[in-house]
Length: 630
Ligand code: WT7
Image (cartoon, rainbow, N blue to C red):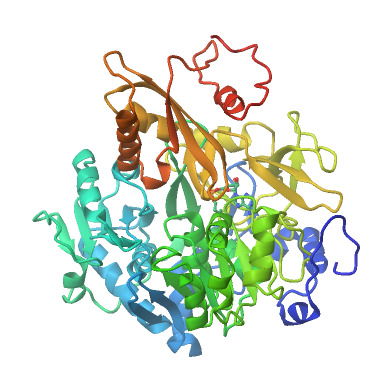
């Protein structure tokens, strides 16, 4: 592939990069995968340990409810921990952690296995059984990793709620998942301040009924309210006999649920995306191995949050499945100074850095000197995820951070896909802003309204035409919504919700969401969540939210509010509404602007026409207005 002349601005990998890479010939791998797709995945699955073999690699008999590795017996945690503890990896570091306040912890595979087993026994003593849901709400601390693994080990379904979410977001997710246990930290450090997670959880629990026990992990140490009979300290239980060192592994069916993770969709409430033990394990293992080219001696850092899919797949499960050493940092990239990240890369000798365009743009603002004063020569590969990366940020990342030696893996994927879908590998020629091509064997396309492939460089809907092992299995408790939302528009095609172009070389260029999802700093938020938070305030009658371009965040939230009669618009009220959204959904959802209006553009059936608001705000032509009522 490196010999073919490609169109546009292309960065070819150096000989050194290709020589070192596990995969040296992308075309060959893709050919192999396309010739025998089940066989390709089967041979990867065979690299992992199973308690019982599958009957079939892919079962398509009940489309779109695909099954992978049917009837196989497995537990992802066995492959993350137990497998390595039996080898010379036993004493290898699995996790290196640095707190925002400079604290440091490291766990070998042995130690992570030990604490996960103890944690799992605590959960068992609280009555958690296979299939039960457990909600996890904490910052970026090692215990979040152990909490997830402990659930999975005993067959419980974890539901991690991002620590940046707040009261109503947590309440909604506790209620929908019907969680029996909540694992929460007392607080989290963020920019030198304490986010009082337990206080937020207490308020959410007043609104939610199903939770029987709350397990509290001490991190920030301020006083918290402990409700007798409901709340227990993790560190106290870890020192009691119930936290036994040995904990039997629950034997799971390949298709048994591993976790649910809430994400925003087109309409209504966030939906719980369901992933399984078998297929998810194989997909995440393979993609991390090939794309970030994991070698045994690597130190790998995915700077996302475990509370999002990036963290699930590529902080927790992927690195552990590969027996890698992974780094986790608790706080803000600029605390106390804008060199914090670069300092840690130097200190720990990080080889691979995987982050989001918004973080790159945010750090770029402070100038090159913060970066160049550190020795970053350990870096070999860089990564990007979450939104399209603009060429300017790509080039800064490539030259200033990577010193033109590190290919950038721009990975396109979603909570629903579980694993990288459009992604380069180190041996693939890069074009800034393009994730290159689908992972070997996977067929994706850009189609028009009728579902027909569009011509090169024409915009259309991004779709996936082959099933893949880490694919969403359903929306928890809502098979119908799963079928309609993802497979309802075109027969046999998974609708991503993104628009894209494919160029004459077959490279994909993702443009952005075409639904009511707003990507703010790479975080996925639904207009509906922001609007319902606004409407839950006593002064608000109606509200509409849209995303508008923002230099650092990618998109920012702008809102339009109709007040109830008797309320008067004011700067103070706008501020109060912003705070209210922050309190209910989370700081990331705080609107950039609030404009008080007398009416909103609606269709005759009463749907808010957000595209009209958007066009007006951008000074563009709103297009077809035939359905507009007012
Ligand atoms: C949406 C999914 C899965 C990782 C984190 C986001 C956008 C993601 C890219 C990329 C352009 C991207 C898409 C997608 N997106 N990665 N490399 N280039 N856009 O997961 O929260 O489920 O969001 O993020 O719009 O649909 P998510």
